[in-house]
Image (tube, rainbow, N blue to C red; front, side):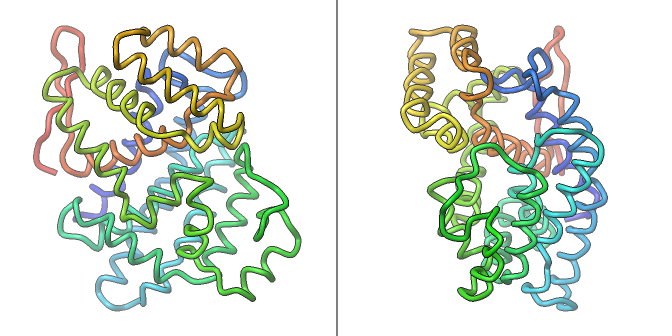
Length: 308
């Protein structure tokens, strides 16, 4: 796939996700006290050169000029995080970058968007301990909320790099260890299974609903199907289970979307479903790569699929 088409898709997906009026998240109508739509706009446009470099590097892998182990995924994620931090003061996109950079590289290695997840999975499997060390540096820079301390390979421990090197922990092994605590790492292991199933659901929904309504419906279905790992880390498992139950009530017609949104915001950002929002962003990038366009009808933007 053409380099700039891939870059555009992986910039557009997160920007769409941030703007869409999904319950509990920052969107074009709602902000948090320490995180606004502008953080997403500035951060996600600051990484264009890193995505370009990621895709160019994948092209070298495809041509056999680099080994997959030389792809440098960890360094690319770190550079994207640094670029994001240089233009704003929050952490609006760490999970999106963790998902997006390998998937963009997988897209460059693929003939069509449906193969990109498996290609990204192969790159993650071929990664090195240095990639993990660079990812740790990225995490320290981004400083995501809810990162546990006192665990094996503690991100903030002075001994972590020595432990990673000693035990040969590349990104694949790190994902195996971390999947239970953070959903985005599970996507590395499955070839982006949830990302693709969500993209497929969005593809079906945009045939029936305007883009915003389709995205909100898909997001509600995600929230009703699994616990958001960011909520688990920040607020605990009981809160995450409660969010899941409330999302099901919305789908069953026993709670309105506005009431659900108010519930999610009752405790500030503790119930902010950020991990599943990252999945939505990656799914929208997949749709953009497959040719998503919009057509405005009576003031509503409808998603239509054209040629990528």
